[in-house]
Image (cartoon, rainbow, N blue to C red; front, side):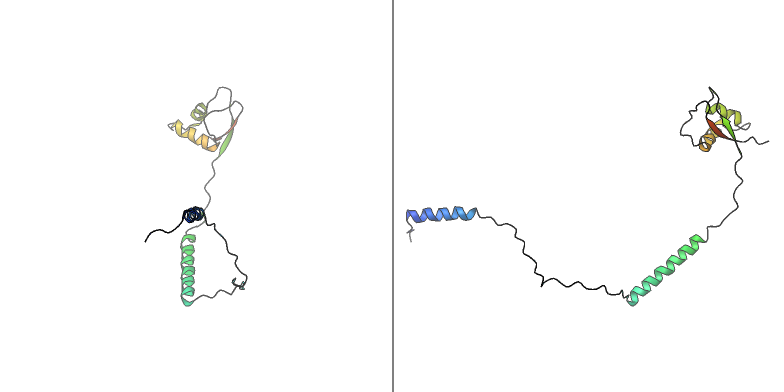
Length: 141
């Protein structure tokens, strides 16, 4: 069987094929009808099953035990005797090391006294300024 199409029919078929190949589909959103929506329900009260009640009870007992055991360890004790301190004014040319040496007990490590002075005075570094007020431990007489 031979092709019996004429030249104009072949040309029309080619044009239709080219036109059809250029057709694209776009995403079309369909409206949701009000009839399909579920009506808003009122909030129903919470009902626990028997298993849920057991779980809640066990969790409450465990929480009470943890609070009882950990909280029972927190006891008040008498406060320690506070550290007696004196106010010291830094003189010209004085360093934290020289002040610590003057206030250190005999045989004490001066480095520990420097650390204590920095901690007591909340110093971020060892630099001092003349006239600065420092808190130093009082002499133990």
